[in-house]
Image 1 (cartoon, rainbow, N blue to C red):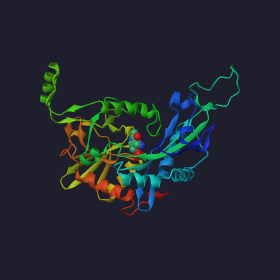
Image 2: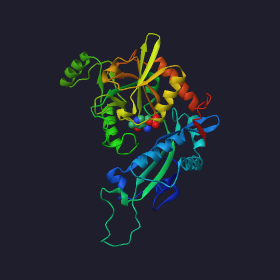
Image 3: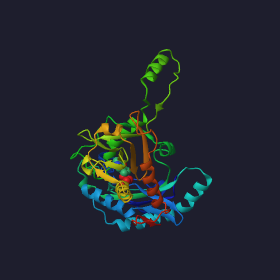
Image 4: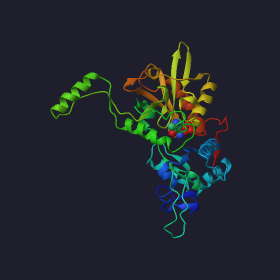
Length: 365
Ligand code: PMP
């Protein structure tokens, strides 16, 4: 078990439940029809204890995601934050985090908070064969339930991606289209699509030189190992929307940097490009504008990625992760760019309490 307690508010379980007992019924509607919404929230280790980054904004998005699916909970974002802090304290995550860090067992540990609101199941029914479990598509007969877990996580796309830049591909899986499932809601159903894109990246090895393909083919025909250079091992997919424009990563928003003479322009897809309106995205737009960069929300054609000077992902887990290649094509100099690093430094500085919290983004446990 990663932590001792999980908070549950379901028909049959309420309160801080021991890890092993934090279960739901197999006939819960969410398992069959993806009737759930969730959040990913980050708690940073700072000199003043664990700081939750924009927690209330995440819970507002969670409550709004639920509303889109006609799920209503008896709790607001302040109530969710109180439970979150209590969960972190009950699991002693401050000490656990310090210990793990001191022992060097994780590179860059942080507290990850995962609340889920979902359609469950009323399991305490009389013993009677004519009772029909509510397991049709209609979710309105099922109770709205929620839970929240908090545990340690490490760099999402790997330490190497942060230091050297991530290698990524453009997925063959189109991002969910408008008026199919709502991209705006952080629904678990969205991630049926996202995980196809993620697996595609994980199972792809990219060659950057055609010579290497010939060498690999010849060697494999002889049952030998080929001596090839410049293989790329993608860690993430970029998805295009139904019109073929850049949407976002499987779990991140995306930004494209162009140097235009002395000016720097930063582009990011707008909300109508079927993106999740990321809270990190919003933070980065604010920080970049304050640093004097022009940020433009606009549709981005795929080919604009290949000729960008810099590209980076943003997200709660990914923070600001530089991208050094897309589909095997080097971006800019093929290493993290200076604008990306400047923005990353500012973001991480604020989130870890090293720089002034001038936007009021931190809430200490
Ligand atoms: N897009 C998708 C599909 C995501 O899963 C995430 C991570 N929640 C993001 C964008 C980034 O959102 P945020 O900055 O709010 O974590």
